[in-house]
Length: 222
Image 1 (cartoon, rainbow, N blue to C red):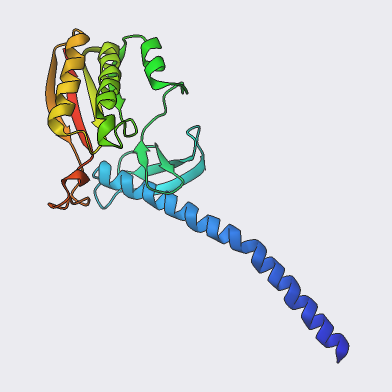
Image 2 (image 1 turned 90 degrees about the horizontal axis):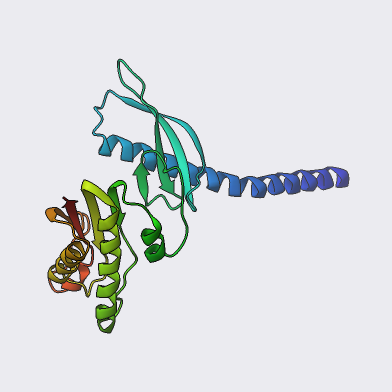
């Protein structure tokens, strides 16, 4: 009887250890599943795939981008297969589709932009907020102008610049003036072909206009 109780206790102890060991794995698998599902949902939405097209998961691995996964998917159309790579951050919140650039450069953005040649079709500027306080606005304006100036110098003729500010103290009018001033100093004739802001699922309280902090301009450089 005593031996049976001891044996039963040992079995329960072993089972408990196994369960505790598997718990982090199961949590990790749940996170992996979420990342993969975000990738699949993004592909279906962004590419506007018809419902009959199946998107199959192939592989998920750590990507060269810090804190991002690389998710390989294979949409099956009736007459062809189209392999895709989707990059999803580990929180499952930031996603982009497409091939990675051949080289990653880590450094001061102002210095890096000055070191690059003028051979780009598209430039995207999405810096962290430069003006977290109203008093920092003049310095922030100089920073935004410098970044945009260097970006305009990088672009080929008819190249596109997607430039953003997430400083809520920076209003639309001032941001546009800064960007156009940068274009003048860069010697580029620029057309404003679009604006970008918060999506519909990010409503702005009419009593809190500062909530409209994200401002984006799409510029075509002649």
